[in-house]
Image 1 (cartoon, rainbow, N blue to C red):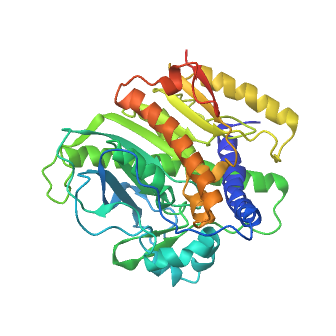
Image 2 (cartoon, rainbow, N blue to C red):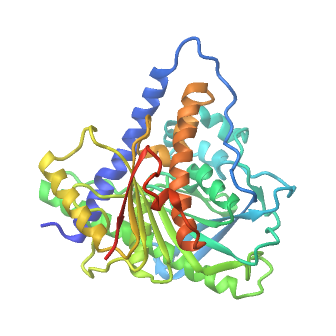
Length: 427
């Protein structure tokens, strides 16, 4: 039986694991592809391509309507760290932010240190020391014009962090978007809260002696709960932004400057499922972007018993995984492709499925990971940057079309990028 919760289980049980696995495989591939004579260069994040500078500010928000299901305190409520990345003047001066807030605390935490060292490899000391820097300036003044900016709510992948998508976020902000990146506690590898508290990734140990059926039921329940919680985070943050945008709160410098009639939800991998489910639940979200967040072999998008569909155009931006080893049969994959086609045809017009197929592209290419793994080595850095620019161009084109209402030949012209197959959908 392929219930909606089973789809969620597939996501958290195979897609999230695949993301972790491809990180490790990519690291080995990068190491193996480096020639002995290739000179190393300095690792730096690419300069954003738009005209705006980057400002960043973080908030600790508590959702009093939802309990913290993993807290030992029965009175605790869901608490989030939310970072607003916003357009500023390109000449704005101030303190440049760190790449990963809390890196020093994470490096000192025995339960987190092994994960972050594995996740970031040789680059981790640069992150801890602050040597690797974003372009964002902490609490920089908001750009004076335009009057209001469209908003993108962003969810990271399972076991990841929004800061691992700094290149994508900064590029969007430089083109006039406010990106609201949610650090999802329990799903993120770790989240730093004010006062130095660090919340590590939560994973319940599997009890011994379970039957295969009991294991599946357990995974189904956990996955459904995870997607429900992630989507709830997005909806709560949108509510909070609406409240603050209408206020004159001096601690919220973006008050009145957010165009909340033009909001998108976007996420990568498991975060793509969070974003998709939030879009199914909330019509205020005007566009939905799932970055390699399909759920093979079950479906392209989360399915729940309420059978809610999309109320806004959807972009499913995928890596071509054909030829990869899959944890299911060819027959199951063929059925998945039929199901995906049906789901996309049920989306509002005009929705898109974009299949990317450039050399070296993999599931983690939507994040900074390939660039960090290259660690300044010239040929690998060139590939990583090419693929970053490719994923960014289609993401921005979709957002420009539906939040800025601009013509987008990259999506709608038959002579689109040769490294992508673009299909339009919608009833």
